Each structure stands twice: as structure tokens, then as C-alpha cells.
Length: 480
Image (cartoon, rainbow, N blue to C red):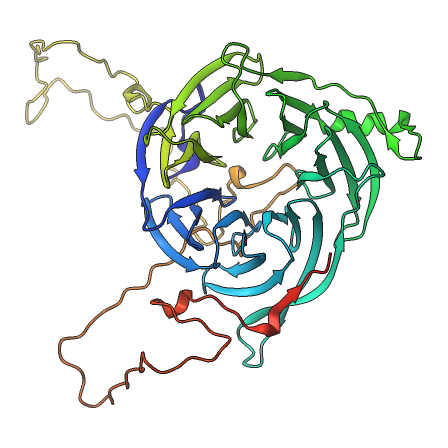
């Protein structure tokens, strides 16, 4: 699909049911890649299913963890996928090869892992109480072809003097700062040095007296972020306003800098008093806000510009709550995860034939067509001779460059000029071809003995390419 030909005017929020994506496992978390061509679904049996969003089929399945997958994060180029689980492990996967680049093991279940938006060798790992920064590098294996990960550094983000529990943490839009939400309604901001995991405490501010459940930044073009707290209110802040407030920051009794700032917009359900589970921005200009309910299978939409309520979307598998929700990064499409299945909603498609033929008229009923004189004649005698130009200059041939790729502005951020030519947009499919008569000149390949015992550090799987990699050479423990 040519994204430049999509409708850019009118309502840009999804309200029409499209289809349901059902996989072989029970999905519990979702994540689109940066280009919206692949949808990753983490399942409760430890598998990761990768959906080709164009064909709406499962392109690859990775057996990743021993426990349920809690979060997924795509690298900027789409080649690597980070996953966390309740089995205390964090993996970085090579999407094409379905192999683990590196693995970290903590001493508690992991709620979230996130790639740095501009550096896929830095990850933010969040457990039940703490947040960690880890960094690795790529090294070649002995065969000189495959790559593996090597530990570089790790660090723990410290708590404040009140020893507040950090319930959520996230990078900002460009990976320059880390925002950590606590159980007492405060957000602490840390500044990161580029290319490293060295950080310094910047400032903190109080959102409310309730716990911070989620912090969500807009995808691009806007320096705004959503804050979901336990008081049933969605608050929208501007990070530029926070940077301006740094000049007038004050010190508290313990010497930490703090600022007082109010959100420029609040969203809540005053009638039903809905408790929200997750909130996200729409793609593009972040003109819409989406929030899923914690008690039923509904998703609500608001217009961010005026704060008006727009629509309620219902998961097709009624009776169960919404497990996760994701907005397509380029199109007006919402993926709602309920009962292990993904329900897609899109904006209504209106046929506009006048865009192709300006004189096109839509008929409400059949009419008799009046033929014009000599309209269907083989030779029109009344037709005027073709007009000849005064000079016989030959038109110059226009050279069309078919080798240089055309830059799609939809794939670029505000500070980029060219696309990443090394990015992974689609997963190629491999065909298993069976021949009826084997070639006699080619010796037959001996079959592997499925009953042959495996080494202790390996696990057998039906698809050997998707087996969990427990190689201890690229597994590292994070000490709290």
C-alpha cells in the first residue's frame, strides 16, 4: 500500500470493525514496529508471534521464554526485538534468524523492557520495584558470520530519599531523558549521556497523591506525554514546558531539585468513573487519545485538541477485559487485544471516484442515456483536424531515475532527512518444497535422530530454528 495516497482529510480516528487476528497461542501483549508492517504479540506460553500486517498472517513464531511474555520493544531499524517475561529474563532477538543476541537474568519478574529510541544497544529494564539501564555491543562469532551480544555496562536508577517504589519508567521521544513514576505520585527525570548509560538526576515534580501507573510519549512531532495515575485521570504534559521550568527549579529539604507544573489538559470519565488500564496517543500529530478500561472490554477515544469524547470501541470477544491496545504508527488503525485475540478497528473507507474522474456523477437510479451525434461512428466526418504546432521541435526525453530510492516522509522523524536503507520492513517467507523423485546423483541427507539426547544447556522444540537459546556465553546476571 502506498502510504502517500491515504486519505489525509476528514476524521482520522478508527471507528469501524476490520478483522480479528487469531494465532495458535493466547496473546497478552502487543507492539508494532516503527513502520507498522509487523505486529508482534507476546503470549502466555512464552512464544512471540510476528504478524505480517499486510497479509494479516503469522510470518514467524519465536519460542522465547519459559513464562508469559510481559512486554515487547522494537529497535529503531526493526531488526531486533526485546522481550521480557516473568521467568526473570530479558532477551534481544534477531528477528530474521530467530536467535537470541544476548540475555540478562534478574532476581525478580520483569514488567517492562524498552529499547532506547535512538540506540538499540541500550535498554531500560523495569522490575516490580526498580529500574535498570543495560548496555551491550555486537561481536562476531568464531565463524565470522553470525553476531552475538557482549555485556558492556549496567546501572540501577536510584530511588529518592523517601524510598518510593518506581512503578513505571520510560524513555522520552528521542532517548535523551528517563521519566520514572513512583507510588506517591511523583515523576523523577534523569538525563542520559549520549551513547552511554551514565545518567544524572535532573528534577522531579508531583502529579498527584496517587500512584503513577504509566507514562506514554507521543511517537513523533510532539513533545507531549500522557500520565496515567490511580486517581482515574489522564494528564497531558509538555516536556518543553518542563525544560523551561528548570531555570526556576527549587531545592527541597533533602537538596533535590523540584518544580511545580500543571498539565495543560486533563481527561476523565465523570459519569462512569472508569478506571483506566493503559493509555496511548494516536499516530502522526497525536491528535487523539486512546484509553482502555480495566474492568470491561471497551476502549475510549478523545479528541486531544478540544478534549471532547469521540467513540467507544468494543472488543469482539466480550466478557473479558482489554489486555493491551496499540495504535498503528502510520495509519488510523487500532489493535485491541482481548481474550488472546487481536481485534482491528480502522476508519471508514469512503469511495471518492471524482478524484479519478472530475466529471464523474453518482446516479441514484437508472436513467436512459442519450447518444450524441456521431459519438460511436467509426469515422467522424465533423471532427476538426489535429492541431499542428508552429514549430517542429522534438520534445526532449525526460530521464526517470529508477535506481535511486524515493524518500518517504512518513518514515522520517523531524530531525531526519533520509530513510534507513538497512531497516527491516518485512519478514521474507521461505518455501518448503518437497520433490517427488529425489535426484540419484545427489546423496540423500541423513535424517537427524529425534530421540538423540540433547546437551544440558539446550531445549528441544518442534521448530529447531525457534528453540530457546540458553547459551551461557551471552547470558548475564544483573545484580540488584
